[in-house]
Image 1: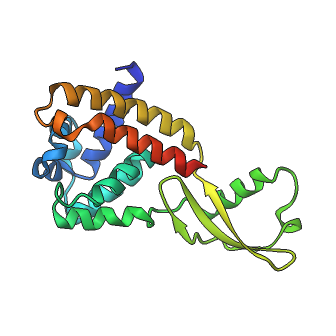
Image 2: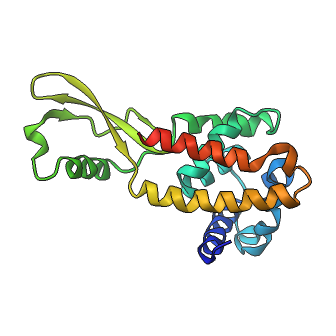
Length: 204
């Protein structure tokens, strides 16, 4: 692993502990290789786990970024691997990811059109997102000629974050496939490759 991977693992551990996911990690065999990370943070000993465990996992994946949201989306379809309550919560990641702020969305639209004022292009832009997913969110808008359009706004700095986390997951998958007893059966390297392909397809 590269040095930056270890820093990212520390961040992941922080988020896992912040959302008190140690109980989910212990209960879900697919996630058990991560269980040792949860003991390293003081959040394990100071934060209450009051929210439903599926919701805590969903919020943690959202906080960790698009790669982990995509992992959650894939896992939500695998009820053979997850308890029903966790799968139900992760299903919300299909199209109910928390959108980024309205003002940031408008700023990104303006950035895409350069110096041309948006009011010279659009009669109206709905600031509230119609849907929000791991890579982008969509807003409805109306052109000056009255035509209705849909604007797809890619999340800020998404490609850089994707490359970082894909490299990390590839490294972890290689280790898991080599040393984890279920690694060969579950083929984590192929799962990561599928996640990477889906994410880059979504960018287009």
